[in-house]
Image (cartoon, rainbow over all chains, first blue to last red; front, side, top):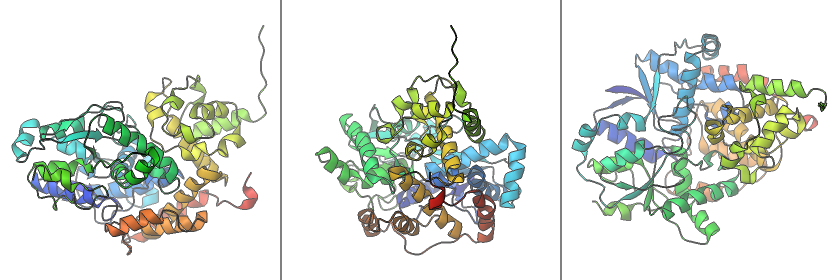
Length: 286
Length: 196
């Protein structure tokens, strides 16, 4: 399987573990990822908060490149990039006039043919048998709170699973031998887009999520979003200070956990660069 | 007995403007409050989401556009997927941010900080075609006048190799600049004189 891959602007920095582990797992599964040659920022929250056509054009310039590559599908690891590309695709596919207007802005004639899928959807779509056969190092003893955040499950035009109680990530993690907990904050917003501007607000939002995961008995959190991961990982010291209780739940990308289960070594999926040290937990299965 | 309450002049105009830019039928809202009940940011907002909806219906333009609430909305869309009237409240909020920017209103306090962050982010993307995290953070600190905020976060990132000091630019940057040139003049930069 060959599919276009949109790494997103944070792939070398705050979201490095996601990029590294996504590429490693896909390589292992025989999924060939190809970067569009001159991709740009998806526009993110600031673009759609500022001007609708600006946001659409920024995402469409990337989609047009996928079409130029002759590929039918594009995936993004970052859930925010996924949502921007997928929403743009949905809007342009149903509105010819808008498509023409956006094409005039980008100077790249896009025909709105590209399907946008998050990495989670692609991996979950592999099929149970195929998946089981790949697991050589089951995640025995991992109790995981699968955290979906906002962008994969809302709005309904682009969601890949139920907005209130999604199961897609739970399913693949269980197939990999882990236990996943039932908990209350699976799709509660972590506030990452406000982290730079209003950190004190965001620490309170992250605190609720970390507390809920711990209360459900989880010993770590799995995410499928670059924004969520960074936010939940880096802010636990401040959460501990706010709540007057020490919290240090390792936060993984689901791709890191799957990579470990498939026999990749911890360095290959980059578990050594988290803010909350994930290595003691990983040692359980190595 | 039927009594009509006269609304201030121009109220219908503002509501229509919001409906046009957001693509949402704001007048369908019947104030059940579900958007506010599920909003993860309602605790820090000066106006609750359902109040914003009602005030748009009533044409209270100044109050709504100058609120912090419209900027504190993180577009998580919990309200949107739960609204029993199928209104995307998140898109109404997005439309209000766009309108506020067009009118040169950046709000105050926490809300203003979000608006300044958005500007810093887009300035970085306009220059390089991609986000340069370190540059956008520095620019935001300058714009908001709090030079050393987030320094602890930046240092932690640096120590983990997650802060890049060099930049990567899109090859055909002229294409990106062209998009910005055509779309951003529509956004009037805030001047002290236009603030309400």
